[in-house]
Amino acid sequence: MHAAQRLMIMALAGVLSLLAASVCFGVGIPDQITINSIQKYYGPVSFNHAAHINTLKDCGLCHHHTTGAQVADPNCARCHKNSGAQAVVSCKGCHLAEPFTPEALKQQRDQQPPIYHRDKPGLKAAYHIGCMGCHQKMSVPTGCQDCHLRNDSGDSLFKAGKYAPKTPAKPKPAHH
Image (cartoon, one colour):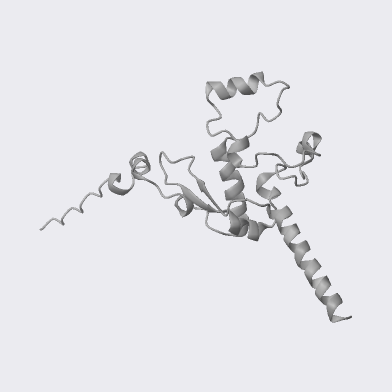
């Protein structure tokens, strides 16, 4: 093979790999995401999106069918088999932060055409089902404060930190 042919093949391979990366990982996908849906009791979580993309290599594992990934669950495939990529792929784009408010329940009841996602978890549950399940499989941290640092309101609610009950002093032994 001539040097010019090799150079041409290498250049073509480089261009194709760049195109594949932009298709798989998308252009404009954030490297870091701040998750602050439970900031009343916990500080925001700085989610390293880039590291998760590089580790998992399959956006559909977290984003289900919204990225245009093939739908694996046969129950979902009944409606979403050919859904294609969606405009909104964020968790909060589908999962409500407050799924049990009167407004959310009314919207679900009155949706036309009727929706079949009555079992769709709220945002907090979606994070925990997805994140915790994967973290357990991969044997990485699963403790609450491994990701969520509790703030002062959280310490107050959970009786921790400066709000923790004081341990009583040990009684002095009686002298005989």
